[in-house]
Image (cartoon, rainbow, N blue to C red; front, side, top):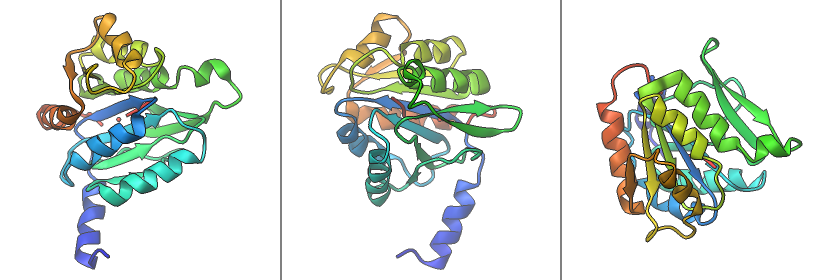
Amino acid sequence: MQSAETCSTSVSRNLRRPSSVVVIAAGTGGPQALMQILPRFQASFPGAIIVIQRMRAGFTRVLADQLDEVCRVRVTEPIDGQDLRAAEVLMVPGGCRVRYDREADMLVLEDVQDDPEAARSRTDATMTSMAQAFGRGAVGVLLTGLGEDGRAGMKAIYDAGGTTIAQDEDSSTIFDLPASAIEAGVVHHVLPLWNIADQVTSISHCTAGPAVAVLK
């Protein structure tokens, strides 16, 4: 159990404005990949992380709770109207997508379970929203998985001056998802799974400006 002093420090830390927004997307093999990546982030991580794992509603809450047990940063599911905080991971619920409302300075959570087209483009929509809001402070990460949802979002981040990272083929369970963005020429770094957290941390510490978002 955390001491009162530790809890106070944690709350203070999470109320800080993030220096970057890291959007991570994953499909098949994603839970195992996230279990290797997210525990590597330190409690002092200056960015905010949004994770969208392709998974049915309800199962994302279980995954978030499991990750919260092993991570130094807090892992939870977001709620509509929430702000972005440093050293916090937001696991988007299955069947939902997240976008950022710049005017209101908050996250908007949308249920897309009854909209097949929107459900197929959750990653693209969230990455594009973060690219528009945070520009070079946006970081996109595509992990193992099927499909192409994320390619357009990575391009949006790439074009906005942000940074894009794809998991390499050797460490991927399914290479389709990262390969789709690599082949489109919108990936800055192709890395093995175990190097991704260090690269993201380095980028977030170097990012200047009002940046604040893992997804699929």
